[in-house]
Amino acid sequence: MFKDLDPILHSQLRLAVMSLLIGVKEAEFTFIREKTNATAGNLSVQIQKLKDAGYIDVIKQYKDNYPQTICKVTPHGISAFEEYVKALQQYLKIGK
Figure 1 (tube, rainbow, N blue to C red):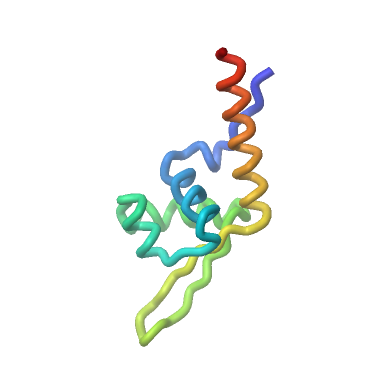
Figure 2: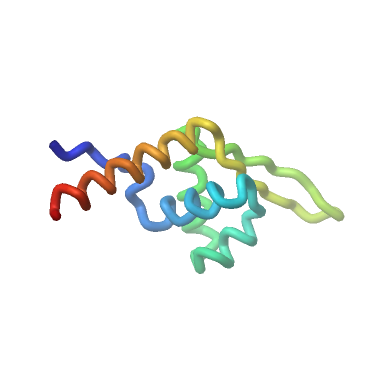
């Protein structure tokens, strides 16, 4: 009756990161940190979990001699996010 919710996406910060990336496809770490109001350390940990799950790719490079981290949603991440949203919608429909 109830579908299991993806435990990776069920975290508030990871869900916020994925929601941002679904809209923009890729974003710099600093942009994500500002939008989520997360600490750099906590955000780094959550981004690593999303990367380990295959939901995002993380590109580390240098821009004007400064390190730059770019996060990019993967096709697997998009479909996991869509499934998560569908599962949540089912929870809401059953309650009505």
